[in-house]
Image (cartoon, rainbow, N blue to C red):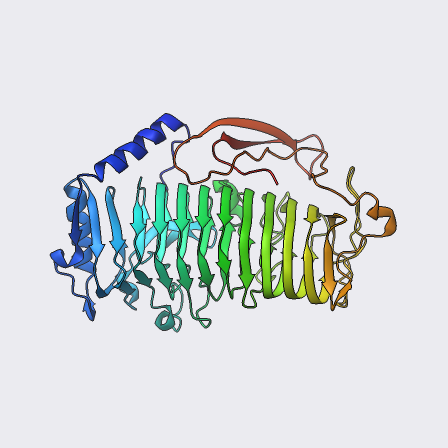
Length: 499
């Protein structure tokens, strides 16, 4: 159904692509959508005029299509190779509320490949796309919310390379704001994303089975996850088996939403090597640090770091839930079960309603969660104890203490260093290991019997070509003794600065 990437494309080829696309823009022409008959009166439907502009520029070898001042109503637009889209400061692209204006496409919806309603702006199989300037893309989600599914996503970037989305205002997406699927080397920067709090499924940014994604300087307020990282669901996600990996999210502000940066719940292809740093979480965001899955998912979420985060009045600091939204009909558990491991939470400070909760699975523990230099003032402590297993080279936190009622039967292993303090109504009542554990609680590094795939250094994700020197690392399957899995992590310029 989908055109796969040529995964052997090297840094020289990527360099040529970048040089070619940048060089071509020097002589490619610029045209306004009004040159093709578009009218910005807020009423005229301009789908044909705007698409004609895209098609004409593509046929002429490329160029920049400009949305000038005005409100231009339209149905789905399909961008083409060599055509960039710039929306001027006072320009608005506004989606029409009419399902027939959004033809179905081959895509992934909620973790499964299928035919589904197209997005408002569709970028499929493109190299070097720029979607920029200071204008607005309005999904009319305040009107679409009364319509039954399917509802169109706002911007879909699918199977693309070297893409930049910059400076725009994303408003009232009917369903998901910026959706990145099967893409590489994507930079999303300086977006302002706002959705009314009565619009369901209005995620800000969804990164799905993509790699080398850099999100920087965005300001997001939605009625669902501000950013969600995904990799397919259940059997179909395991069939495709493409992880979301090598992702850097930094210098962002996350306001209201169901999560700040969430992992899952579609995680069947794996999520790994993700760094979230230097961000502010506020406005009663439900769970700035969020992991969610179901027993049917399978897949491994690993090597995730949240660091240098400020919490200003969030609902909780963290949430780990391996049995999230267990509503019938339920699929049977996968074999092996989903795994969450190797999570570092470093220098997270501020105020929240309560610290958080951890809900593992009976046969798949949440392992190697490390809290370092965290100082959180909360009305209630954390829920999720007791934890029952102490693997080799790890210590066990016997309970997450606090005034919240402890939930029995949930398992995980947590590291807490001596500088971590979770304050409940002014008293140290957060994560409190027993005295015998306290002596070994300084854990700057993961303690794992089988090393995870290395996290590359330094952090230059999204900075154009140079992703090379792939190395393979073997590690044991946590569910079957002696079985070996191989993962590939790209080294070189793509990666993360070690914590």
